[in-house]
Image (cartoon, rainbow, N blue to C red):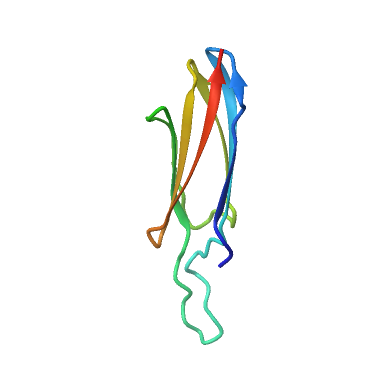
Length: 108
C-alpha cells in the first residue's frame, strides 16, 4: 500500500467564538474485506475505522467509519473556538496503526 498521509486544513486564525470549518483527508486504500484475490481468497479488511479530533485535549468530533467508505476518506466538520490552541487529529486503522496530525490556531 502507498504511504498513508493525513492532510488537514484548519484556518490559521479566527475570532473568539467563531465557528470554523475543518477539512481532513487521509490517503488510504480502504479494503472492505468483501473482495477476493486472484486465488479466490478473501482480501482482509483494512480500513480506517475511527477518527477523532480534539482541541486543547478536549474532544470536538469523532466518527466510527465502516467498510462502505471509499478510499482516501474525507471528513469535514465545524468547531467553535474561543481560545488559541492546538487541534489533534487521530485516525485508527484495522491493523492497529494510528496516524496523527496537529494544527494550531490563533484566536484573537
